[in-house]
Length: 340
Picture 1: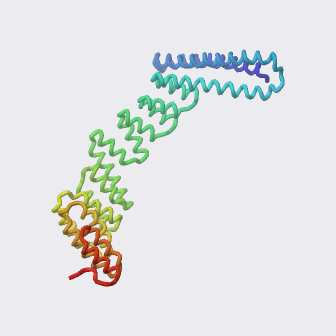
Picture 2: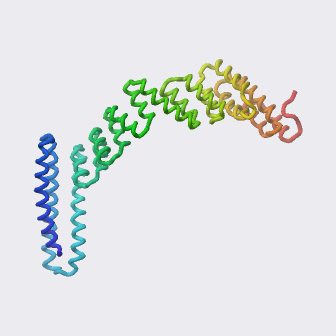
């Protein structure tokens, strides 16, 4: 089939399909609003007009070329012409969509992407960018089966019930709790937060569980219990103890708790306790005495098996030159670590 015949047949087929399309659009009046149908029809007529201009231009160009080029190479030229034609039509669609976006007519732009370019994702994204969140959610859900983006759009549209249902399907329990809390349904919010906290505890993620209790549920005591459990059961012990102390804001109470937990600490956790004491020492000058004394006890207890631990004395005595000299003597074996 030479190029001229291809163009003629394409134009005839296009006109026929356009007629059927117009009839189909008009038929939508039975189940859609007049303005919705009018908008769709308007877009189609504009696009059809553009396509006819492109085809007519190609037809005129081909007629001129035939007078000089003859029929040589018609097969490969026809293939090139078909690709060129569709590329130009697609380019016109892209330009039309961009024009509608520039005019902030996001619905028309989305229709071009979905109906003419067969790109549902760009259509949904265009609606979302235009803050048409309900419409975008429907496209994400029905056209793309993308529950995650659909839920986000429903959330932005304040369609909390629909968003909650989707997050439940995706088993995003914390997000479900957040949305219930946003609509002041604290009973359901805490129910889902509790499931999240239980999951974290089950997976030995005690700090994360404590954050759910403290930040989401505002249950500080429960948060502290989980952190203490993590310390006692050696589940991320350092971070659990560090966060446990960080949640005690009364200095006297904190000082007492530091001493109390140290007295209960087993031997194999003393080094971890020493590391935590470094943080507490820097927190407040009022904690210097208790943290330094605990550090001295741990260092004295462990120095026989871990000689390098004497270096920790510098942290608790940063300006004490005597301590620094004693450490140096101990390391060189010329004297004892502590002087009477």
